[in-house]
Amino acid sequence: MNSPLVIRPRIEDVAGQPILRPLPSAKCRSVGPFVFFDHMLETRYAAGTGMNIRQHPHIGLSTLTYLFQGQLQHKDSIGSDQIVAAGDVSWMTAGSAIAHVERTPAALTETGFTMHGLQVWLASPKAHEQGPGHYSHHPAATLPVSDNLGVQIRMIAGSGFCLESPVPVLSPTLYAELHLQTATTLLIPTEHEERALYVLDGEAQLNGETVEAHSLVVLPAGEQMTLFAESDCHAVLFGGAPLDGPRRINWNFVASDPAAIDEARRRWAAGDWPTVPGESERIELP
Image 1 (spheres, rainbow, N blue to C red):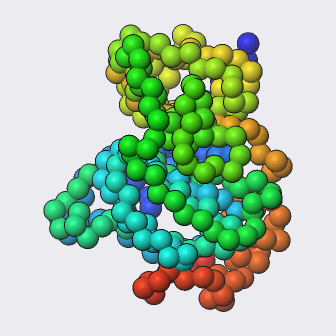
Image 2: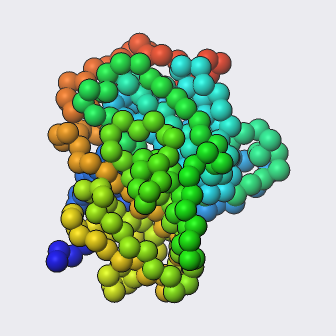
């Protein structure tokens, strides 16, 4: 039996929002299609404040935003303008060029609010790296849930545990939210080749070994694992089929061909990029 790989996240800040980022890591570049994982830590915003991530570009990936608390407004260069509430899935596939904005809705900034959630990037298969962008919004009620013997599984994207999400993933994907009551157990099957567990809150054991909160644990391929909740536990399990080749990540760009990133950087710097309707501010190249 191989030992799981444990990754402790680094601390980042995105537009004033504290972030824990375990992926990518020098120890692990991807898990299934997942190449980027941000945990937006639970943060209280006073009235008159909020997040405002200005117009910025992407290629070669899909972004997935999933909130536990708060709301975000998503706007993009293909005309989407959507309020994303806690429990919803916001799914954007970049294709060859897309830009988007993420900010706190005006109604929340007036009253103050708490933000807590996850944003991940999934690298597109090579056949989908180019072409038009796409956006879809999936309300919380449309996501399938299994709730049995103190273990609740909510399939955010992809499939697993006999559940299948409506989110239009581009390759075999697993992304599930887990709630385990104290002293309950979940058997993690081998239906997906690559898997990782991230514990958001609570005390847990994996095959008898303690898993610290805010740890990313990459599970050994082909091995069933047992998750035991020593206290009420909140976690996510994610992964899928391995990528069809290595990916390069540079700023907000993901590609199998470095030349595609060079071209995307040139175009964004030159202003040769689709724009978000009604938006003039943008984030420049670092």
